[in-house]
Image (spheres, rainbow, N blue to C red):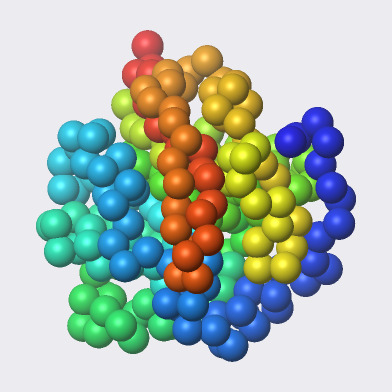
Length: 216
């Protein structure tokens, strides 16, 4: 994992992901879910109000935002490095897209303009293989979550794939994920979950949720 990262990676991440979202249908990519049941369940388990500020980091054109809008959430942000991905999501949502804040940015270099009650990431963090990028991401996450807010991270587990979309990723066991955030984040749950891709392959994820302790 982090101690033995492979430093090989794409030279231009943005071009790579713009090409992925241009050349493939969303229903063909390995991370496709017709309904993101796990993420929706984790978000519901926070029992926060429908106006809670939620950001989906690396959300691309995932259907998570569609279902959150249908469930009445009103303060949603979707961030992705690929403008093509976000444009596809906006087109799919039609008039409802104006109810979402869309941010084109690299998750490792994103400087959050606001704080959030839920930071959700099922698709971006495990693509960070450079120690500096991982450190920047975690620092930004820590400073971008309100007291009492929640962090939901889903990554490839130590039993999951070593590559995705042709590039190396970082694998995280439950033990590594548990140690990921500082003591002011209280671990609520951490578990391994299988995801079935459109081709029928099974990918094992480590999914965890933390709650940021209230400031004194």
